[in-house]
Structure formats: structure tokens, C-alpha cells
Image (tube, rainbow, N blue to C red; front, side):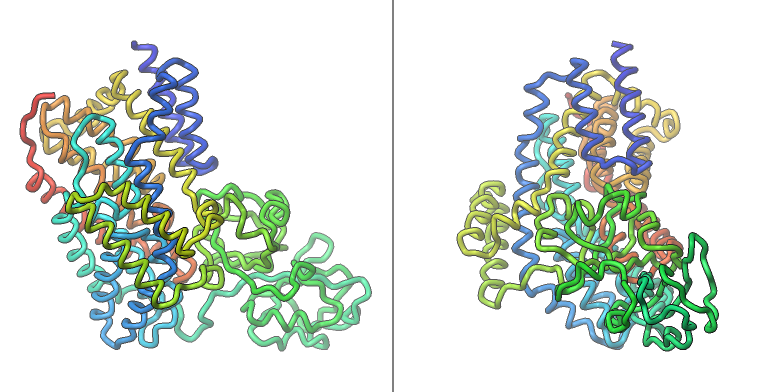
Length: 579
């Protein structure tokens, strides 16, 4: 038993380390861990496979697929148009509460993606003062209901698997309401401290574009000034790469040579200026045949992260060519093909006909520009989608219809009504999330059965033991909060739950407060652009720096944590139970 427990701890240590490094996608790591556990006879094949058909996992998948139809309604744009008011506090209040409500019943990433474009066109307030509050409000809204975020449903999967009564739809709504109200108040008070990074500058940070002087170019032998490369509207010649050496800054009297790589910083709307120049072959020119350009953001879990466009074979793998790259406020240098991609990088693409069908697109890119968003439904279809979705939720809450059955019927209905297509479902199927949850359920049972969860719980008690049960509760909350900032919220919940449950069993108390500590701790990602998808989505769109997240996120995290630590034991007392 000792050897097996030591093996499990070693495996979990390696798993956490690799998750923090972000070099391998979480789904691959979790599947590898559960596969290794099966090979070592730590779990049977039947038990391992049963975790992937857990009812809560099915509910999660159906909810995410149904949300594809919800994204096509015009409700988000309608709300966004109501935010053009002069009072910043009033705008934040409306934005915060409406976003939180919508995030409590549908996918919060979809809410944020649909609102970004609207907020960037706000007439009275800079987007950099609105987009980060938008992300935080979406995170806060996930604490209102069971379906508010995938993390809640994942934890419910663990609860059911442990033989406990499932979490109710509104079990944590009271705490969630207080959290949302306090969070919106913090955003209204501190949101004004966010800098205006859109004042007296282009609405977007400059992209890096690349063009090459062809061998027969009429520009050869002429200076930069005579070639009129100093007078381009909204484009600036940053540097010239010649024979592996960089010429920077570029002198107006510099003569161009064949093969020179010209690096421009500017707006892609001015791309037509490069098209009109004879003798310039700009990056991805051969792929542009009248398509609309598309803007995407590299995901924190993308396989292309840390690789150049050539190394990841971008064109071949995604049927798209990169026209330009933008990385926040960092001044990029060198050719586009030499830049190692990072999470949060914004790419301007020329998409091929198969780009949208790429099986990993949703996992490689966090969001795309409005040109990529599916066509909106008309008013009649939007009403049908909203009414049917809310009806299913209402029937599930009253116990008339099981939520899983209701969502399944709803999905079939949307398919027959033509609201969504099979191609969309194939493209949006959350295969990685399903693999993570199913694998995590198996790992959780292994941790409990082998006493590993109890051993880790005792380790936390060593640090907080003097505070008794309350200390253990605070310890598991802080442990989950730290994990969600370092890795992902779903992975944090998966690793923290078995420890929380073992702590409750060890004290002989109701596990509900410890479960709530995991739920709220996993949603407390406010101080990093990488801990939560919506934070990363607004990072580049709002021209933010890392310090902006600290400026607002730290106070918000402190207020959030204080409310959770105070209210959870009050709503869910540490009453003694017999296991």
C-alpha cells in the first residue's frame, strides 16, 4: 500500500508540474495519468470507463452544445447597446449585473466574445476601462447557478461519484449573489483606475507585417524615401532584414536591395497599400483571393505555443496563412516566420475553405473576431431559442423534467429547426473537457482509495491545524485558489476535490462546506490573464498589461475570498455526520 501510495503521489506531482509548465495540453496529461493508472492496476477498466459516462459529464457536454444556439441570438448585442451612457459607475453596474446573469445560464466565454466588439465601440468610455470588468463579471456570474460554469458541473460529477447527494441548481446562489454584488461594487469603484490605452492612438495596437523586395522589383536601388515607404498611411517601416542582419531604425536614405525583408508596424486596414506596390511580395499574399481577413488569439493551451509558424506548419495544419502578428504592447522584431508564438498573441489570418472545420481550432484559439462569429438568428428564431432554453431550465428546476433529458430534447429540436448544424456540433464538441473530467474522476477515486487524499489533507492541516475545522476549510479554499491561478480552473477543481472530501471525512463533518470551498476557489481567477479563458480573451483586445490585472484583480480577489470564507460556513455549517 505504501509503494502504491508513493507511486500515486509521484504521478500527481509530475502531473501538476507539467500542468504549470503549460508545455503539454491538460487533456493529454490527464488521459496519460489515468491510462498509466490502469496499466499499473490502480483502477479497473470498468471503473475507468464508467467515469466518462457520468450523468454530470453528459449534462455538461449537452449544455455546451446547446449554448452554440444561444450564442447566435441577438440578446448580447442588445444589452451592449444599452451601455452607451456617460456615467461610468452606471455603465459598470449595468454591464456587471447583465453579464453575471447571462453567465449564470450560458457559456461565459461566449458572453465575453459577443460583447467585446460592442464595448470597443462604446461612445463614452475607453474599451480598456470596460473589457476587464466584463471578464471579471462573467467569472462572478458563474458562481450563481450549477450551470454557471463548467467547473460547477465538474465538481458535481465528483459529488455524485462519491455517493453524495447532487448539488442543487441554486445551492450556492445566495453566496453567489453577495459575491456578484460586492464584485460589481469593487469594479465600479476601481475600474476607473484602469488606464485609457485607446486615447490619442489607434483603436488597435499595431500589428507586425512583413513584405519582401522581389528580385525584379522597381524599388531596387531607390531609397526608402523615394519609394514613398515613409509616407504610408497608418503603416510605419520599423526595420529591414538584410542577409540575416537588422537595419533599425531605418534611415530615409537607405537604398533597398533585392531580397530585403521589410517589417511594418501598423493597421491591417492599410494592407491594400502594400498590395498596390509593385515589386513587394508581402507575407501570405499568394493565399489572399478576396477572402475576409480573420483575427484569432492563441490559446493558453494551444499546441502551437512556443513554436514559430514554420515549426508548427501553420498553413498545412490549419489551412490558413498568417498576414500579421500582434503581441500586446511588446514591439516585435524579425520576420513573421521567426517569431515564437505565445499565449495571447493576436494573429491576422487569411483563412482557407477548411479552416473552420479544423478539429482543434476551438482549443488552439480562445476567440476570433466578429467576422468569424456565426451568423445571427433572426428575431423569431432568437425568441424560439431563448424561450425554449429558459423553459427547459424552468421545468428542470421544478422537477418536472430531468435536466439532462431536457437538454437532449432541446439539442435535437435545435437540429431539426435548423438553428444549429451537425457540422457546428462536431466542431464545438468539448472532447478535451470530456477527457479531462472523465480522467479526473478516475484519479480522484484512486486518491481516495489509496489514502493519498488523506495524506495530502494532513499536510494542509500541518499548516492550518491550529485553526481546527475552519482552518482546514480555509486551507482547501486557498489551495484551490492557488491552483486555479497556476493551472486551469477545471484542473484545479479536479485535483482539489478528493483532498477536500478526505478532510471532511477525517473530521467527520458534512462535506458541503469543503465542496463549496473548491467550487468558489476554482472560480477565483482574477490576478492573471492566463488563469481563466475570459481573462485571456480581453488581454489583447483591451491593450492590457499584466499589472492591470494586479491593480483590479488583487482587491477583487481579497473581497471575493473574504465573502466566501465568511458565508460558506454560515450557509453550510460544519455539522457532524456519520460516513
